Length: 341
Image (cartoon, rainbow, N blue to C red; front, side):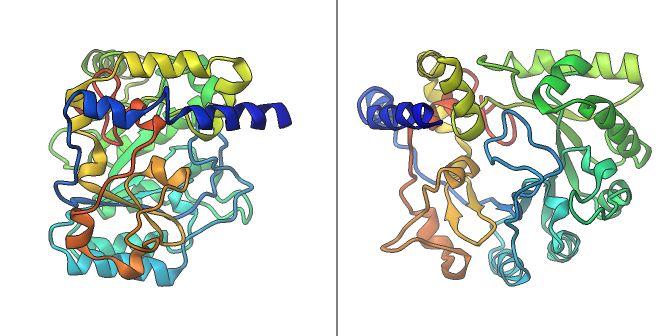
């Protein structure tokens, strides 16, 4: 562990020289500034029923961090006060494990916001890892409030999915998608949107999103009779668990070179931080979920939180970048909604 920390510290000292994202922006004469705040993405807990190898949140059944009701209410206040913010993106951990999740959804829908939930599929069957509280009601709850459900399925085959997310995850995920389909998710004409997420298993960039989506749709339909709307391909970010894996395997520099060599100016212009604000479980504000996980907090003379949220000042802020941003700008780009170009 000590050797890993020493190597990690050395790599951090190299960021300003070799892995300099700002230099790439300057070389391509890019001014990447906010254009709006369309989405409030709120991480309401780090507790999860899983502990996936690629998880940039370091979520697991052992985590205890969760958003309290006061902070949830302030997020709802922000949504109420700012008509320009159309979307609430609720994430975790497994966000459904926060005791205020249902309340957050119901009140946000009452404000006529589009609500997305980052749902890991297996929590429906596993329930709460400490209290044992059942979550079997979730498919009906999602459908009843017309949530957009976004769920990770690393591959349409059991071996690769379980390799990344744990033994038995694939079969639970398939059954969970079946329950969502029964509620109308992924079906034409229902308006109930189910989108799946692909993360590469290992040190690879995602293949073309459109082609992989066609493969997913064919395999899931032919093999399991399942349907969904879209596939989002997301690049594995070199932070936290995935970065630790890269360091242990001696492939960190190789992976960073891969990301840097694939830098795409068009993807840089479409990064999600230009139209999104990320909120941590304790209310702190960040440019994106990845910045949140390495504690690159938005500041304006002081670190900012939901309790000093100012739309006009935030839309004119300076976005904070670091070496992990190469993950969002490689190839066709990567965001919480898949490719950007």
